[in-house]
Length: 158
Image (cartoon, rainbow, N blue to C red):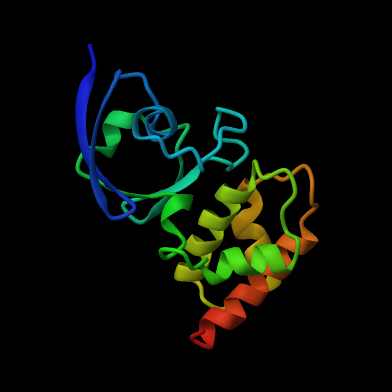
């Protein structure tokens, strides 16, 4: 039996039906049609499916879709503002901090969470915060450079 869920995703009220065992990741991708959030491992180990749920960074593969009832969800699709990329997205492009793209949405959402919590992280703090996001293609130096550059720009109010 499917459950009716009403929630807000990226600022828009949405409703969907899901089985009690369906993950939030499944609901986002298959019921709502937001395919930016990726499944890397399905066990919460890689961070590719990271989203914000009521202001907390979570692996959407570990959250049940029914748990989103009445919640606020922010996905990678909600990071940009209309046709303008968020500065974090711009810096990931500028620093070539992406390749295959599986980890990129989760890294960007996680970076946004980091910089909202700590606008001036040290490189060590950024590496520690993003340790739950695995990347097999780029290595991490370009990612950390993008994060640190985005932090600088965001602190300057650009």
